[in-house]
Image (tube, rainbow, N blue to C red; front, side, top):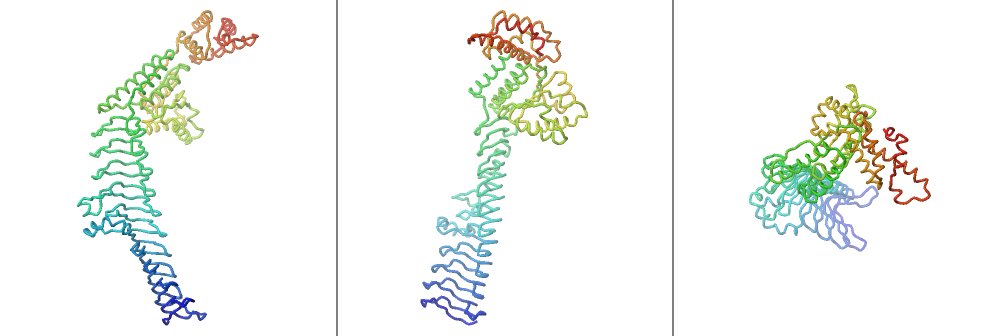
Length: 558
């Protein structure tokens, strides 16, 4: 190896340093040397081997250092330092020309200039922008990031240059306390998971004084989803749904002593209150209930529940504990006594009172809950429960879930329902319904199920006068009318029916079927007329009822 010089075609120096001949007799760089560009600026000085940079060296651009460190096969590899505009930018490990492994990134001078006095006075604050792991030229792995004033900003996981994964974020401050300066760090602001530099996933938020303020699920830098808010004494203030850090959705509110104050709906940080607007909606629903024929037990029970919930709301307004109760119900009685209608109204009233989040109505029975194989029933029940969440799940003929002690499918359905009632106890109301005697046997056979029901409503058969009122109501709702003669026949026929002794009498369904058959008889009569007026279309005549009696309509409608 000898030291030589090589020149560009225009005579300017290209290389000075060690050289040797290759197998073809050409001069190649080998040993220590310097490379120059065509303007005479130094590009590289350092070690070569077989015409490539190999070993230690320094790269330049327009007279300024851009890299100093180790090379392998012309690539930055090993320990090295990167410069930006002549200033220190990175020092650490390289692989295949990229930052890889442990390294340190530095702030640009103008960024830290406002804090130079602080950094000079307290040398331990003279920290970089980032120190930690790199991969493929970017921050990836464990690392620490610092504020421009030198205080710790974040420590934890990084992916693709972002705070991502598990980590701890510290409060920023322009005027740190002496304790913070001494420790080089402020108090913890957030501890949990990050995604692309924002809080995302499970985490905890702390006050500037180091007290836990909230924990739960974060989305796009805000507490959104299930979470808990805390008082300064560490006691949970709220447990439930949050949106953008505010109480929103279903949740439980506590006083500073830990006593539950309210359980129900929250909107934009405030619990649902019975405002004049809500009071009007509840009054409308109560009016719907009161307009129904008969049903004294159902009306009384629902009025009792409404009054109870309203008083509990007033207690909360005064900071008193609200008394939690179960809102599940048992409806007993024959078909057609209004159980489904009342259940729908209850769902809407519960929504306005904050008991349920949506109040929608889902009806099912054994066939909708029980599958053909053990193991599938639980999945089928879960599907139905998911649809009913936030509203009322109405299970008709609930006693059919257990035919006998050997009914494994029914027992699996009940076990799954019991779990749903526990998991969704704050946002699901189940109403089981069926014949009185069979429902009593059903509940006695399932003590776990019975213990979760606190309200029992008996739906008695309608009296014959109430059946007539239901018929009259159907006529009004559907734009039909009739005279005294027609009314007299209807009443007479209904009074002749032994309603109390007819097995499984269908009550309101019987009257609806009767109404539909009379509409058919009226249609058969009208179609024979050459002209039909609006009055004709609306009117039942005595001829219609007489024809019905001749066809034994009242006896054959069952």
